[in-house]
Length: 156
Image (cartoon, one colour):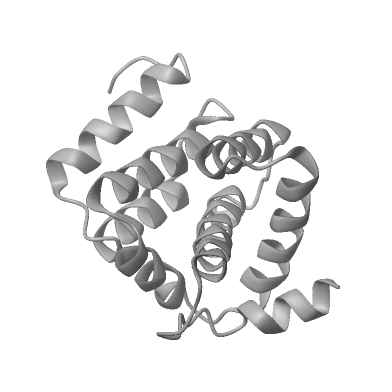
């Protein structure tokens, strides 16, 4: 089943005839791939980071625990085979409103801060994703500050 889903999502292209359910699944996978990449950005994936990603997917898409687990499994496999992040960010840039993209950035910051520290690699990935998702700098910084506060970390 995973292979079938993987083939379906492999291109992440939304054909004009795609129904709402297909579009939603593509957006879920693109979001999950970015969250997985953030978990792995510092080469030290902590349980807190995974839980932050699970929370982001469960609340952002109203998914059950088993659906989140399957989505993260598929996202991990997809991310390992991806040569870059552009197809995922462009899917989100087309499919999400600015408000939703800012929410995605905040969720990514939450994953980055979940282990109590922010690595240089996480910072660089966040800057790249902010640009690829066309997030205005003020919104980007505000999302970072909200995520930092939610993690209980002092402001920088």
